[in-house]
Amino acid sequence: MRIQTNIAANAIRIFVAIGMVISLSTSAHAGTWYLMAADLKIVSNPSVASRLYQGSRLGPLQLTAQGEFSSREECEPARKNLVNVWRKHTPNTRGGWDKFGITSPSSFIRCVPNTDPHLTKSPAAEGTKSTPSMEIVLRIRPGR
Image 1 (tube, rainbow, N blue to C red):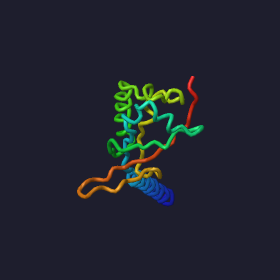
Image 2 (cartoon, rainbow, N blue to C red):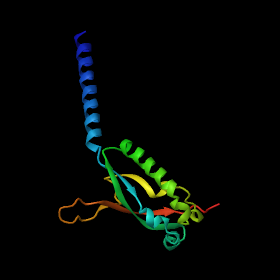
Image 3 (cartoon, rainbow, N blue to C red):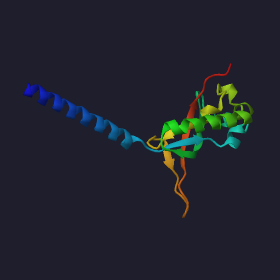
Image 4 (spheres, rainbow, N blue to C red):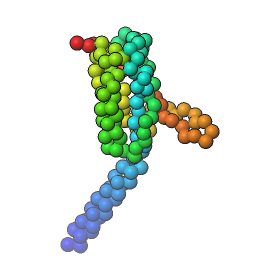
């Protein structure tokens, strides 16, 4: 009977330890997420898509941080709001992106973790905060 009690106590300790490791590792890996977007004026320019056309891809296209969040769950609603704002300005139609199969501004707006290897932080001017940026390449989906 005493052996079973010791086994049960040890099993409980192991499960508690595993739970602590999982919760600590989750919080340790939780990092900053950035809402990244291209410049609306550049994307709205009708000649930009043609200039970036390189066979089966478009790019590179510069994205800059529009906001900083503690998780993807916090970033996604802001991304969706920004996509809706962009839809009102229809940069994909005016920019000529539809002929390359890009029919939604969501291609130009992303939530990106600070661990993304494409993310760079440009050197900040004295007394200012550095702004994360990244270059992306968009795959072409031929328009209909």
